Every structure is written in structure tokens, then in C-alpha cells.
Amino acid sequence: MILLASCNEPMEIKDWSFEISAQAVFNEQDMKSTLYLKLDKGCPEQAYKVTYTIDDDPSTSATEQIKFDDAFKASIKLPDMEVGDHQITLRYTTENFQSQGHCDFKVTVGEFKIHAEVNTGSTTSSALLVSLVQGRSTERYSVKVRIEDKVVAQQENINFEKTPIVSLALPLLRPGEHKTEVTVSDGRATKEMEVKFTEPLRQPNLDMSIERSTSTGRTRFKITSNPHNLSVSVYDSLVVKGRCDYHVCSYIEDHTENKTAYKEMCDIAEIDRFVPVVGTWYNLTDTQTKEDIITSQFMENSKWSGSWSNTGDGGFEYIKVSDGYSYFKIESSTHHLQVDFEKLDGITVNVTNSERDVILNKVPINKGKYSYKLK
Image (cartoon, rainbow, N blue to C red; front, side):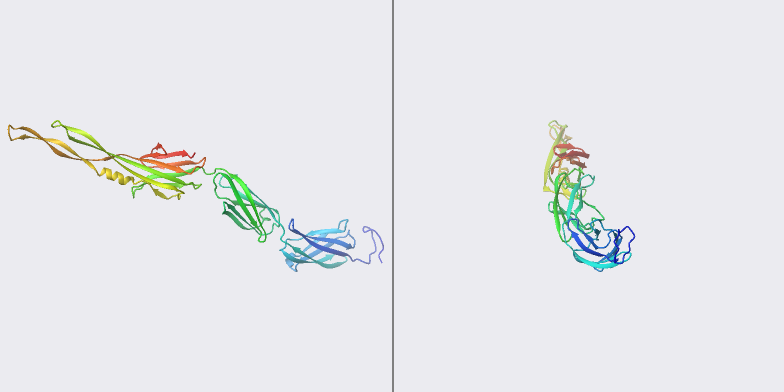
């Protein structure tokens, strides 16, 4: 027998039982599971303790204190579970009564959504920022980034719950418009998206050196830094000029006449457009050989030699005789060097030159440092 009275007023209760129905639902939008409870019989104002275990796994056991609302309903958020079928074992407890129950639910793949953007604010390189907009943050995700069909960054086993925003460093890119293709996978489903961004000019210097090899005698060049991998073609036209000052007998006896002889040798080296390997020397014209050929040549000097003649009426006679040799000396070794880099606005080419006479892109440069901008 039950004496009717308010739940807040003292009453005599002989039937302490209650009945609760349960349903577990997986929501594909937020990838979360929720246990929904409905009090079919009993007083909604008393405290109920709910203990649940999923798939008989003790590690999933938890106890929640619940209170039913005016519609005799309550809910409990369940932990993330693997995709598949699951069963919840339930035990309901009040001060004077307890009961048990169970319900089944299924976790499906569901949809996940991502957001990706490129941060270009760093001084070193841009970074792709990836975050999870919808989906299970505890899943393990992988991210792969392509630029111009080449994988430039990737990361595995991403947990967005621990790292809400994942940053992947992009390689140094040429300034201008770029497009990245981002692929994100949770092992079951794959999402792809395209991100466009404008890359600023980060490393504006390209460095090169010109020198003559001490071992081969050839003039050569190398690129010591080329951060944007610019291609280049090189044309070197060498003109070596030699001069020899010597003397010969003049038409006046006992007098000599000073003369000057000139010799000239040329060489050409041409390298078609390519992307040079940083730190590698590339040979140009054979400067030393041409200079050696010229300096190995000479002119013979002559002079008058006089003596008294013992024939005829006698007198003083002059005859032409050798007076040694004068060798040619190098007057100039001029390189007309045309270095044609791939154009990229804002790049400064810094040249270190140790050759004597270089006309670079129609501009004479001295030994030492010289810089110019690509246009």
C-alpha cells in the first residue's frame, strides 16, 4: 500500500522500486556518444546513481550522479569508442533500491571536417595550420601536403585533442602565388582541400664567386648560395693581349730604334642554362694557357757593332748583330662575362671576384665585391 503524498513531504513507502529505460546514440556530427535515460517509474526528485561498463571492459567503468528533469529524462556523455558495435551494462542505485539494465549502440565512421590555412608571417618559411572543425578529436589523423604534385610536408598520428592546431613547416618558396593540396585521413575516410596563399620574398641574396684555379689555370665560377634555385646560363669571351717592347738597328748607323709588338689570343666558354649545384666550381675559359702561350713568344733585338776595316782605304764599319731577346708580357686578360640568371624580382646577386679584368654583363668590375639586382 502506498499513501499518496508529495515527494518533499514525509510519506510511508512500501514500494521503493523504480524503472529506467536507456538508449545510447552515436552522433555523427560531433562524433560523440550519449546515453539517454528515461524514468518510467519512480520519483524524479530523488538522487540516482548510474554505474556503467562498456563491452565488459573495466577500464570503461564510470559512475555518475544524475537527476531527472521535468520530462523525467537525463543524459550522460560516453567516452569515445572504436568504430563498431558496443554494449553498455548499467546498474541504477538509490538509497533503498537498485536495478540493472543494458543497451546496445553502434559507432560509425561519420564525417570529419578540417580547416587549413597558411601562415606566412614567419621570417624563415611559411607554415600550414590544420585544425579539426568536426569529428573525433581523439582519432589518429595523418596530414600530407603537396605543392606542384610534390610532397613537401607530412605528419602521422596527429591527436587534435592534444594539439588542436597542427603546424607543418613548408619549404622555402619563391615569392608569389602558390597553391597547396592538403590531404587528411583518419585511416577510414580521407578529406582533401586546396589552400592558396601569397609567399613573400624571404631570402633576397644570391652569392657567386669568380676566380682562376691554381691547379688548372682555368677561370671558373661557383654559386655559394642560391636559396630559390634559380637557373643560369653563362657565356665567357676571353681576350688575352700581350705586348713586347724591343729594339732594332735603325737606318742610321750606330743607332737603334725602339719598337713594340702585340699579340692577341681569344677563348670562348659557354654553359647552357642549368641550375648549378651550390658549392661546385664550373670551368670557363682557359686563361692561364693562353697567357702562357703569349709569354713564351719573343722578339729578337738587334744592334750595330762597329770595327776598323783593314781592307781598301780602311775606315770604321758597322754591322748588325743580335742583342738578345725580349719576351711578350701580358697587357690584359679581359673576360667579357655574360651571366644570365633566371629573373626573380628583389633578388640581389653578390659577386666576389679575384680575376684581374672582368666585364660582367657589360659592367667593368674590379677585384673584390660587386652587387647588382635582378630585373
